[in-house]
Length: 237
Image (cartoon, rainbow, N blue to C red; front, side, top):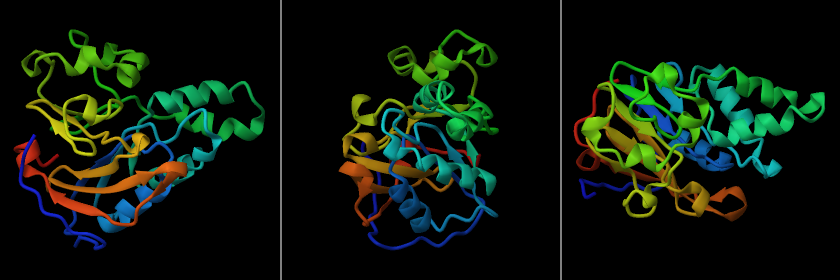
């Protein structure tokens, strides 16, 4: 989808407070997330930060320390939900010794979705025709086509649904860019696939992104873009 874009590299933005920020599908790119938080001048005292899961790759222990960063962000005021990778990891770790229990126990405390007055935040999506409180963990963390191919006017409720899990290039967006329609905003811009990790400021319609590289590295350059043309009108939260 085409829209208004402006690019600023290697700079931080001025934080005017009261922002609603969201990021998903970090997949071990801890340094990339820290870079985006710095570029956005994230302030937990003034901003709301929603973290939508798949912080790690469950089968790659080198990525697990990203959970330490996410836990620290939550302790500082951010809110987090698990993705399918966290649920997979928790299942794996319960069969190991006590040294691994800290991650599994923490993951078990996370809600499966988050809501504000205007947005519903989920990892993967929701199953149409099923009430939100009747959605299974598998629906909320693994659903794909059954969610994103349904016409927007057939989705339940009125909140706009912000989700990750499915890379936006599989939804028809150019690689590394956000995707949206009237009821949905896809924010997994393909960090796992060597595209970009993106943090979206919903009420300001600004996207902060960096390119991801193998071995959980990322480029230092941050792209800061106005995405109002891409996402249309966004509510305040």
